Length: 132
Image (cartoon, rainbow, N blue to C red; front, side):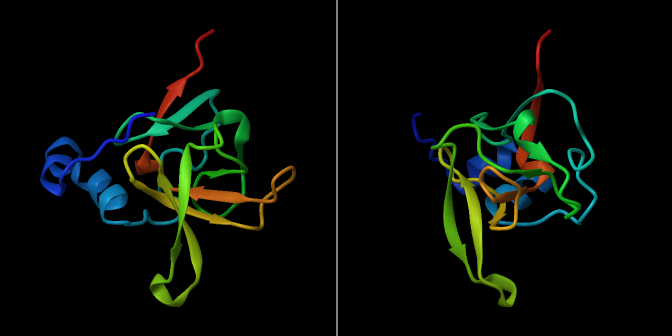
């Protein structure tokens, strides 16, 4: 996967303001407000910035946390983690490996088999329905 590097100005010109805020400024949607929070269609979730495959619908679960949640990423190298000390907490931020977009955070309280909960902003993703 080729790395995508663009300036803030280039990203700002390409992305809607709310998507830019979430993905390039590490913003967060209000809980329970995202379009994919209560969404169960079959398909794939891609990065809203670069289109990289991030998660599959089979990996999604209802965590009741207010954001779409997944127990693992689509491919082992889809994302990477950064220690996040903002807001007086210690968390693991999740970023797109291809373009460095902020996606959300991962927590160690998910279901088996991984025990992880990727808590991801809907605006950081684009959904592609499974073709029948």
